[in-house]
Image 1: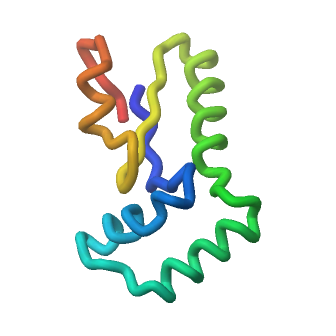
Image 2 (image 1 turned 90 degrees about the vertical axis):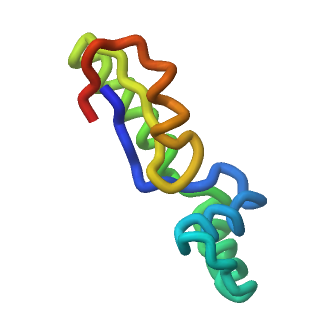
Length: 93
């Protein structure tokens, strides 16, 4: 099973590159990065999305008795990074 989320950064230093990726390569204005950094700082410096996704993957693996890997659509690890690591005849996304 491949569990895919929208994506988020674990390190605020990656925020400009993450936002540039979301903007399909367009450089984000500095004021946008400042606002987003502030929002991350208000919630403790990082999004809970990564932790929630990993917890969900662990619970899903236990419930299904299958390997569950996670990836993100707009940040690392990307699906194309995780798919080659899966040893499976069939993958459910």
